[in-house]
Amino acid sequence: MEKISTEVYKKIDNDLYNADGDIWWKPDTVLNLLKTSVNPCRVGYLNTVLTRLTINPEGMTALEVGSGGGILTEEICKLGFKTTGIEPSENSRNTAINHAKQSGLNIKYDQGFAENLPYPDQSFDCVVCCDVLEHVMDLPKVISEISRVLKPNGLFFYDTLNRTFVSKLVAIKIWQEWKRWAFMPPNLHNWDMFIKPEELKTLLAKNNLDWKEHRGSSPNVSIPTMLNYLRKRAKGVWTFAELGENFILVESNDMNILYMGYAVKK
Image (cartoon, rainbow, N blue to C red; front, side):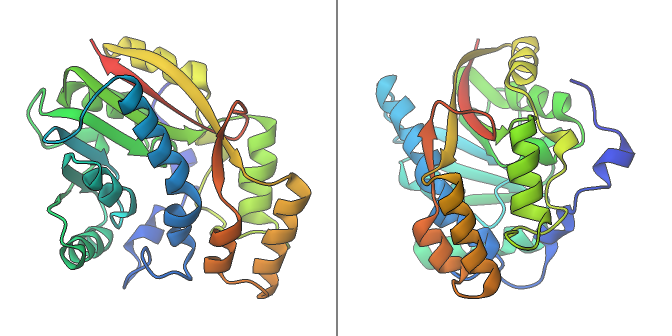
């Protein structure tokens, strides 16, 4: 997989993350769904892998690449990692800093880009990169940088969107474009930037990262029920907070839309 062209990259709206105010932690905002609908699956998977590998994260160093407002970063910190987050958006970074202080969490937040991580080689025991890989312009460079800052035997956890017919229908058309159900901003994702699992495995192998597994993450309800829930939100019957209470992602064997996985630095 190569660097994305400028024409393709311009089709996504990463400026969303530069919006004024707290767009992350307020319950009735779309990005707070990362906390309510997505984090339980992501963090549960991360915890499962750490337990399976008999790794105690207490005192280990972790970096979240693309930390946004800190919604996942704080969960990583609570697992026991000495945690750093890096985020290109100054507004999102400031939100994360303020919320960590309010929560009494010792997290270091830096401003920077995934393509050029400002850390020495072999700085971290673990790197986490979720809901980010499908947003970057130079994916090969990002994977190269993540490998560079990982220590030998360090863990790389990630999730992203698969480039399939199903993901175009669900993640683009239903979740973003068709107003009857859409709950995401219309240009948040671009299907051409989605990543097939085999493409990611190839990039990992090229960058001294030993791929271990992929797992799907899927809605906890049937497609008709999901559409009913999204329609309630679109009509104003439900708030984003109520949607997040009922619509969550769960670990599954289905990788047609979303998948997560991990690799180990050789």
